[in-house]
Structures are given as C-alpha cells and as structure tokens.
Image (cartoon, rainbow, N blue to C red; front, side, top):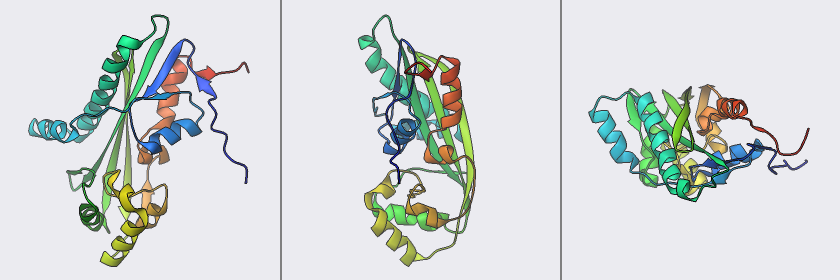
Length: 221
C-alpha cells in the first residue's frame, strides 16, 4: 500500500492559513487535503457561552456558529500583532454540537459520562451541527453550517464498556463519545450527511471559499 503524501500542495499567495483548533482530526483533514496551514489552538469557556446563549433562547445552529467565531477571533487577537504588513491572515474556527431530542450534548468529562452518553444515544437518531468560520485580517468574511443525521444501533452496557476500553480517553474528544473515523463506526446503523461534516470540519465548502480567495498549488502547474 502506498503511503498518502501529506506534503503541502495548496496555499494562498501572500497569506497564511491558520486553524484555531487543537483537534488532531481537523488537522489531519486539512493536511490530507494538501493545505499549507499553521495551528493556533485557543481556549474559550464553551460551557459558559452555551449556557448564556441558551438562556437567551439562541438556536443551536447559531450557538455553533458563535462558538466557531469566538475560537477564530481569539486566535486572531493573538496573531494579528505579529502579522507581516505584506501578508494577510486567514483563520479558521470550528465548532460541533450534538442535538438529541432538542438537547445539546457536550463533550463528556469522564469515562463514566461517556458511557452514559453512548447509552442515551443507542437506538436513536441524533443530529450533528458542524460550524466553520473564516476570519481575514481580523474580520469575519464567511461561515458555513453543515448538518448530519446519525442513527446509532441498539447495544447494551457490555458493548459500551468494551468500546470505551478500546477507545479510551479519545471518547472525551467529542460529544457523543464516539470516534466515527475508527472503531466508532460499529456503533451506527445509518448515517446521512457529509463525511467531513461528521468529523467536524466541512472541508469542501472551506476549500471552495479559499479557492475564491486565490488558493492554488504551491508550485506552478
């Protein structure tokens, strides 16, 4: 089997692209697509933002977009003072929310909570909202919201325990406690939606807007 070449292939002339996320999955998606980018993880109080937004009756899709924006904005505020005056800065912010029975499910904080989430989702359909924001030189210029519907098959406590033993701490990385890109696929009976949306980075719309802004091969065609 030939190894996938993940060397940078695409970039913006006279501009940098930065992903404001510590997510290894998101980084791997961009890297596999050949995008030349930097990483600038940011920390915001997501729980507080969600709670305040829900108290103000903000819709779930708006909350996802808001969180993506705040992450990108935080990275922008750090990077702008160091930006070269001859280069633009494009910063990507992402957020993903899981909706089950109109309830927002956050990332589990323990393996015990991860199991509770898995059993709550077993045999039911839920929705994933994947928001992505693009900021250029401190100004929001674009956003996109992807939606996917996922149905977990029915399984028991023993299966959930076995899955958590196999996946370990990775169950804490995403709401719903599953890693669909690996053995988490065994949890599902049906998936309707874009693969990249489900992984938390709507890649094709992002590449589309970057192409509009000049994304091109780093070497002459």
